[in-house]
Length: 279
Ligand SMILES: [Zn+2]
Image (cartoon, rainbow, N blue to C red; front, side):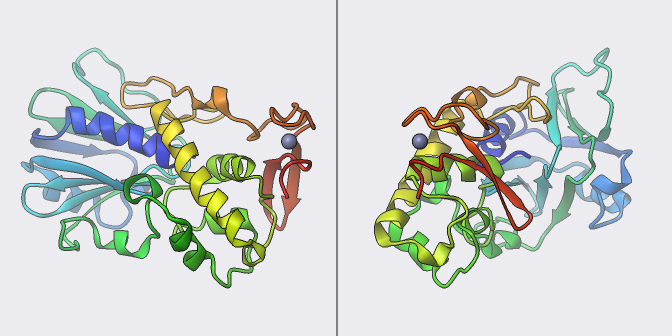
């Protein structure tokens, strides 16, 4: 599932290609990809509008339009955005559910095999023009930073495992299973620890690890796993998967201490960790 670094990579691609472009028309062929409003309404709201900015909070993309509306896109499990400069002759990939045509002749295509992803257009916005739902998310560590004090206050009284808390989008926005495991390894904290058992030194380590892991993953254009479909806007894979320390590395030696990486199960969750150097 695309997490903050992958969605940020897509955002940068969109910023470079669709800002300033007018949407001349939209085709919706996958009903589940537009489910918060009728497809005809989405098409009507987008037609003739110019994209003025592309922002992100957590895993949500917001394409601001010139009339104050926002096109919100969430990729969920397998959603992928592709920008096709010269669409003529470029066959649509299987599972292409939405196509937005732009005034420079290019197309923005939404491909989503598992169909959990979605697009919707809303005028329900905050003062800065972001969609109102951004207010219900925790801080985005990449955009806003994350201090130990902020993290401590957001984890206060959380009886859930650390991994569950870090992937709760109301606690911090943008972290999913891959980066939660990588952050916990870097912070030397077990992902199955109860969040309310963390001491200040550990919370500080998690906050620092969060910033470091996410920044490095954005720099390497996200992680493309063998079983997942994440690609950037031009169809290129990311490379941060080559730097994963624990995620999906069961049995491989921990790069810090040599202990084989374990795959933990707790509740309905799994996590990868080094049981020797994470406590
Ligand atoms: Zn270790």
